[in-house]
Image (tube, rainbow, N blue to C red; front, side, top):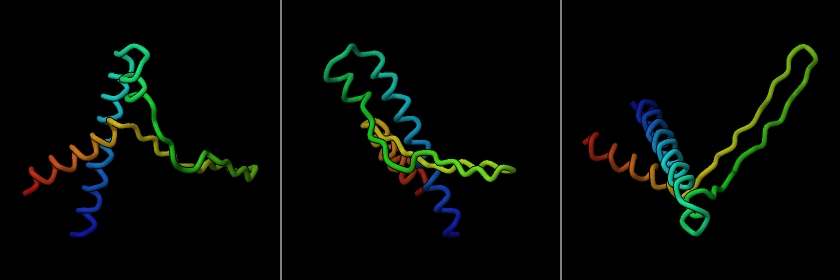
Length: 88
């Protein structure tokens, strides 16, 4: 039962981040250059840049990069709140 709730939590976070990033990108492209545009279009990246391991027979690429902006964080929080109220 614990594994199911962890997967559900990860799904809620991912969906909230995707929706928030989409909305932030839309708002960033809608507004002209300025403070509002910068607020929604700037993102913070954290993670590992892709690295390739070439074994001549097999080539594997590793990497994971998280990109957050204001609306993706708001989307995560909103999705978590909605999930908690619906799941009760």
